[in-house]
Length: 332
Image (cartoon, rainbow, N blue to C red; front, top):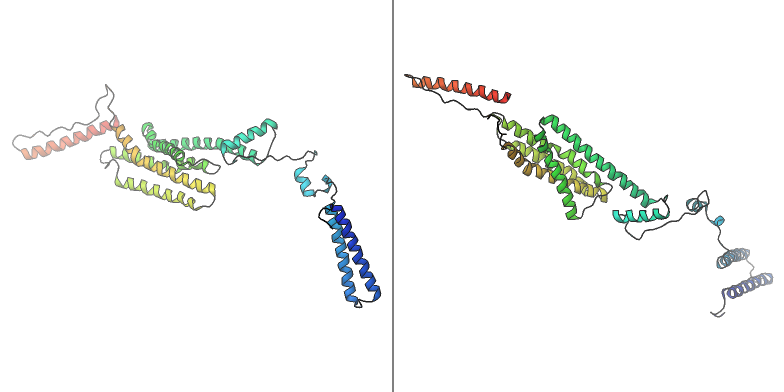
């Protein structure tokens, strides 16, 4: 059999060779050359198996046209709709994890079919809903924190000072993201509301301490215990958020990294920027026409003849008058 023969000619030659072997076996069996019955049964089974495999090979070499009826039910269910329409799958050559590329791919698909669906479309619409919810959550968190701080501080200007670290921390966090190439995804997009909620007490504690220090006998303006308390609170928050950095999930890891950066930025703003603002706010000059509220203590007048007792008596009177004037200043 030459290599130039057609497949059909080769199959015909193989059929003839198999038929020849089968007839030779029958003749040998008739002549009694194979007297063992077990060997004859084995030969018969081997011949039947070879014949069945040979027929299957012939069917594969000469396949019939494939129709939808020949497909398994599972494939028909996935790729054929109830209306008889076939499923068309379109794959993108761009990275669908990239937000601009995903948006461009979905918009191009919708120019052909407005009702197109699939995983890229679901991911695109989910990201849009999450972005909208993120903006609302950020606004709600900021408004709630500001309202609670106003109830605690009871002064509008000081409340605005307490909110400065949150705003600066959020802005610095976004700047660090741009500098390091970190982008928002479906998981770490909730980092900013969490940062605002966890770091709100830094500024509130510092402002409340400064208000207590402005009162008589209030102590230092920014006590060492207050600074250490804010630092310790910030470090425990950083440690808690930093535990997410050991996660193997890409989204959880980016969430932990963003929370650590945001907490560090708000803590820095609370310890560096906020005390300076509070001190500058207290040095603001009084409006014109407003009387000075600082008390003017009176000097003791020595009594004639008894300088020691007179000085002591006059000093007590001066202290009492100073206390009265100070209380009057508080009432004003």
